Every structure is written in structure tokens, then in C-alpha cells.
Image (cartoon, rainbow, N blue to C red):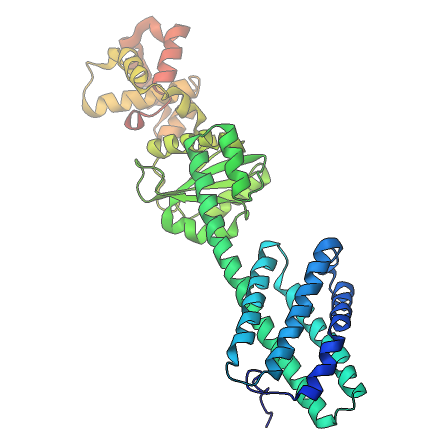
Length: 397
């Protein structure tokens, strides 16, 4: 059975063992730092210059604390170690803030433990200490380093968790600013605060909040998410996706399949509000069917002719006035035939195919429409007015 490491808080070494170690402590610290600098590249630059001197003093203090800990009488054994653990915890948080990984930190602890033990062990051997005492001392060194590294790991993790929550809040604030169309200088400052690298363009996606949570991990890591930002569309989330153009847009459409989504146009990132607004307009015109993806690029004509819905209604009333005397199903059939006739430039067979009727039926209906409109069906201005009036089906206008 493997024995656990001794508790460094409770074990004490005699003065004749510790005193030679205190004398050699400065050189041990120098050798430890030199080894860490050489073997852990992430620390080569931070250890240079004035900062390197400060780190050397910190390493010397940590080793000194260890010697104090194992040589104190034991009236208050926790205090020296508690101070060292607090320093190690702070070191872990500082490393996280500096952007260095946990791997580098743990590697530095491993190298430091090995070199410190080699140098301190050499001093003990030179002082003539017996093998049993040296073995006990080695165990205490590694137990001490284990506790320091665990404290630093905790500090590193806590800092990442805290900074992660702060960054998430900053990203949400950035998304709010983009959706609201804040000025460029406000958006730039928000992006810098969130540590977010702006893409060339952003594309807005509207979809149910539950779908946004499952999709965001499949999108560009810079994708911004915002829920509850559209009072007229409760339960709808906004995703702002970087640069989904060309084939990427096709890929994005496939990803959105099955999620009742509306896909806006790509716009320069500081004009993302324009993409959001267009997606909202299309959502209001064409509420996505179950599982469907509505691409605003497929509905530009409808957006144009419905931009002023009051004017469109007036134009429709004027253009369709000759049909006012028709009633019920007959009026509806004439209206759909007129619309198809305009869209197919009068090609009877194409109109019949679209309406699933016989070409002769199309001829009868068009004869009735010519009776109602007369020469106006040959007037370019009237044809234009009718085309615009009927560009959006009556039920959608």
C-alpha cells in the first residue's frame, strides 16, 4: 500500500538540518528561476529585467516560508502555510489575467520542485545529514509544492470564471448596442471592452430562444446572442453571425433548417442594426412555418413594394377598382388570373400551368378582365400600377 505524503503542517525538522539550508537559500532561488526560464518558454520573457528580480524574491520568500514552516515549534502551525497558500492563489489569478495557461503554471511548479529539491538536497548531503532525514525532507518539499500548486490552480480557475462572466456581460452589452444602432465610437469601445475582434460583416438571425441556445455552439465563436431585445417578437432571440456570405451563407441556411429562422442580409458590422431591422420586417410579413428558414434575400421585391403599406393599399384600391363589381369566388379567380398574367407577360400556357386550369379557362377569364379594364391593360402606366399592386398577394399585403 502506498503511503500518503506527510502533512507539511505537522512535521518539524531540527535546527541543524534547516540552518545550512537557510544559508544556501539565495542560490537555490537563482537556480530555480534559471531552470524555469529555460524549460518553460512561457516564462522566459516575464522573468527578464526588473520583473525577474521581483519573481526571484517571491521564489526565495516561498522557499523561506517552507523552511520556517518545517522548523517552527508548532504553536500555530497553520499561519506560515496559510500565507504561502494565499500568495500562490494570487499567483494563479495573476497568471490567468496575463493570459498564460494552467499548463505553463503547473510545468513551472514541477520544474521548481525538482530543482529546489536537487539544490536543497545537495546542501543537506554536504552537511552530512543521514539518508532518513534527507528522505523525510524530500517528502516535505514535494508535499509543500503540491499544496502551493493546488492553491494556484484554484486561483487560476476562479479568475477565469470571474473574467468569463464579466466578458459574457460585455458581449451582451455589445450585442445590445449593435441591435440598437449606437454610434460607431460607442460600438468600437464596446467591442474593445468585450475583447471581441470585429469581422467585416454581421448577419442577423431571428429564431426562437430555445433554438438559439442549441445552435450558437455550431456557429463562429464570435457570434453574438441577445434574447428579449425585440418587444414585438416575444420569445425571439437575435444572433449576429460574422461574415456568413457566399457558400458560408448556404451552410448557415442548412444549419438553421428546422428552427423557424429568419436570415437577414450581411451588413458591415457597425451597421448590424440594418440586418436586424430587415429580418424583423420579413418576420412580420412571413412568419416562418414550422421548421422553415426564411431568407430575406428571397423577398426583396416584397419588402420594397410594402415599405409604405398605406401607399400600397391606396395603389391597390385604385388599380383594382374595375373589379369592384365582381363578388366572391369569381372576383378571387379573376384576381389570381390577372396577377399570373402580369407575371408571365401574357403567356397563356404558363398562366394555365401555374393556376392548374385549362388554357381555355385562362382565355375566358382574360376576356372578362379586358371587358372590365378595357384599353388600360395595354397602357404601360396601368400595367406598372397593377404589377406593383399585385406584387404581394392580397392576403399578405
